[in-house]
Structures are given as C-alpha cells and as structure tokens.
Length: 403
Image 1 (cartoon, helix red, strand yellow):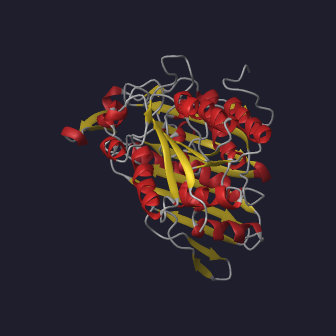
Image 2 (image 1 turned 60 degrees about the horizontal axis):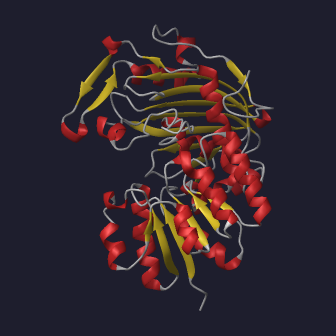
C-alpha cells in the first residue's frame, strides 16, 4: 500500500471548506493524514467542529504549525495576498505545495515563488481546476500536435453577477491592498474569472505545462460597487505568436451569461459555452469533436497533488503556467489605472436579502457588441467608456510598473 501523505491546510473558510470535505474522505481512505489546519478565525468555518472531533490541531498562522509540525504537502487556500509568503515558507520546510488561484497578486511575488521552488527542489501546483481535467488536457494535446494549425484569435465574454454579500463576505473583496499594504488586486480578472483568463493562456502554451505569455495589453476597468478596484474589465491582449485575445468580464450585468469563449485557429475553432456544457471543436472540413465537460472533477488537482507527493510526478499546472495570468492582470491594472465609475444613472439595485445586487443598464448589450466586433467599449464610443494605455509586458519587471 502507498504511504500516507501528511497535509497541512492553510485557510479553512470558503474554498478551504471544499478542500476539507475532500480531505476528510481521503483520511477515511487512508491516503492522507491531516497534520494541521491554519486560520486566524477558525470558528467561522462550518468544518471547525469536525476538525475538533478528529483532534486535528488548528493554528492561527502557518509559522505556528511549522514550529511544532511538518507535512509532505501544503494546501494554500488563504486569501491570495498571502499565497507567495505561505508558499515560500512551505517550500522552505520541505513541503510540496498546492496553491489556490491566482498564484499571487504580483509578478514579483510569483518570481519569488519560482526561485524558492528551484532552490528547495520541491514543486508548486496552482489550483486552476480545468488545467487538471482530462477534457482540457486532451484539447491541449491536440492543439500542441498541430491538429488545429496556428492560433489566431480568442474572445471571451463572461457576465457573472455578484451581490452586496459577496463583497461584504471578508475584509479584502474588491480591495487593492490589505491593511498591511500588501497588494491584493481583487477583481473579476484576478479572482472569479481568473480561471477563464488563465485557461486561454494555458491552452495556447507551447509546452504541456506552460502558458503563452501576454506581450501587450490595453485595458478598461470600471466599477459600480463602492470598492477600491474594478468589478468590470475589458481588455485587448496580444499574446505570443501574434494571437489577439479579447477579454470581457463583469460582476454587474443585467443577466448572467458565460463563460463564452471562442478560439479561432488556422484549421478550426474551439467553443466553450458555460461551465456545464462540453467543449466543442470544429474543423474546416466539417469534422467535429466533443472533448467533454471541463468543470467535472473539480478536485482532481488535489488528487493529483497527493499522488505527485508519492510518485514524484510534476504538476500539470504549476507556476510557469500560472504566471501568464498574473502578468496580464498586472498589465491590466497599469493600463487602466484607477477603475472608472459607471454613471450613477445607469446603476440600479435589484434583488432582496442575500440576492441584493447592482446591475448596470445597457452593459450586457455593450459587451455583446464588443464581443461581436472584437472592440473595446471606448472604441464603440460608449459615453461612459474610458480608454486605457497600451502596456508593453515583454520586459515587465514588477507591479506597479515604474513606466
């Protein structure tokens, strides 16, 4: 029988609760020993009682855990302003790491994580679940084999409403920095829809475990909620190989839709329409292929990380692949600067209780027009639109860029 893998989990609320439920099952199967959990406010987690029943020690910080214990695998599910520091610490204590998305807030933090990975000889997996999914892996193999020809253009539209409760659920939602001054940069493109931005780069990557790098970005950032950062993002991105990417994402639509993502290659197209529908490809000769549903097996990333500790197998998605999203997102922030407010006359409140939210009149139609014409709101002459500058990312050293 393969050895039991010891795990420490940092962050037991939110996504941490999902990890805990899976880890409880792994404990029963004898695959995992949960050496400890870390959270400054553990009583807020619905799983706290279960941890106490199992006698699993809970620490207020990761340093406290490592002062008394050790683990084979650290699962980092804390707010993303802590990802870099906790990952580097865990690597230095001999752990492999599964870090939730995004890898970190800034490119300089990701680079520090990569350096720690090389220095310690341990690996870091980044929890973009579609990258670990068999459907997505098969699609990427077909792209790398040349079956689709060279990639030309990609466009993504995602209208996903978020409520007042969403932004009130913690102290960092929608924030640029935390109380210590650490960068957070929480936004649709760097949190809820970070998956979708990453997925584009991942599929265009030249190697199985890499992502295509963004080279230039022009972005427009907007907000309806009273938050520091944006709740709406529109960007044109040039990636390696001259691929043009149009990214349109908002948390204040009138109606939800997406993710709708279309890849255009020399010899065919790939279409993703929603998380519960299959990825469909069609070639110029009329051939079609159903790759399956990429949102299935959401915790395969945890299963493979546990197996990787045992076998030495490297992650399907690590820091090299996840770096592209962080680089692009930092460029978006530099391009647009401070998010522009939507005109108050367009912002309306809808829903009640936990469903109470904001919506911007006409935004759905505007983004649909952007998607169809491959243009940004300012290029369509929307009166509320504010154009951003083009940022060169080819030698981008740190966020914020001094340029």
